[in-house]
Image 1 (tube, rainbow, N blue to C red):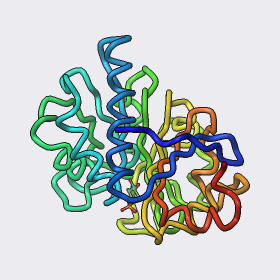
Image 2: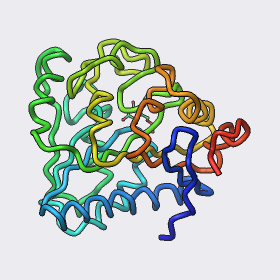
Image 3: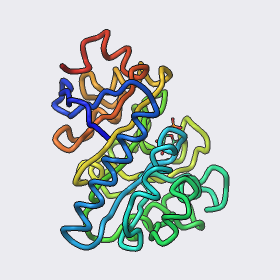
Length: 243
Ligand SMILES: O=C1O[C@H](COP(=O)(O)O)[C@@H](O)[C@H](O)[C@H]1O
C-alpha cells in the first residue's frame, strides 16, 4: 500500500496520519512485514514484540499470510496478563488467533503460567533472549497506557527488561510488561492508535514527554505513530500532529 507523507511530531517521531482504522491496519501490517523482512534478509531471523488489545487484530490478520517464513520469526509479547495461555484475556492467545493458520510455525514466547507476577516477569526477562528486539507493535489505551505501562505508575521507573504490574487500573490487574528501557532499545517501534476514544490520550502522548503519557517516553528516533483521523482530532486542534 502507499505510505502517506510522513509528518514529524513535536518530539521528533514520525507520524503517519491515515483516514480510517482500516487503512491504519493495512499500513501497520506493511510496516511490520517490512521490518520482519529486513531482519530476515540481514540475519535470517527476526524478533518482533506484539501487543494485545482490540486495535491491532485487523493488522495481525493481514500480517499472518504476508510473512514468507514464520518459522524464522520469534514473536515476543510487549505485555501479557497473568492468566493461563488459553484464557480469553491472554494476549498470546489473541495474537496467535489473529495471525491465523499461515503463522502456525511461528515461535511465540509465552509468559510462564505459574508463580507470582514478579516471578513471571523475571522468567520472561530471561526468555526474551539476549538479542535486541527488531520491531515492537504498541497500542494506546484510552487512559494513555501502552503495553502494560500505565500513567504515573511505579512500573515506569523499572530499569530491567520486564516489570511486574500488580495493580493495573484496567483488568486484569496482574500483568507483566516490557519496560521503557527495553522498548527504547528496540530497533523500531510502531504505535498504532485509532478511534475517537483515544484522541485525548494521543494528544497527551504527542505533547510534552512525561509519566502521565507513558508512550511520550518512547525514543522518538525509533518511533512511528500510525493514527487515524478520529484519533488525531484533539492533537490536530492543539497543533501537536506535526506538519
Ligand atoms: O490491556 C491492554 O490494552 C492495550 C490497548 O488495547 P486496545 O484494546 O485499546 O487496543 C494493549 O495495547 C495492551 O497490549 C493490552 O494488554
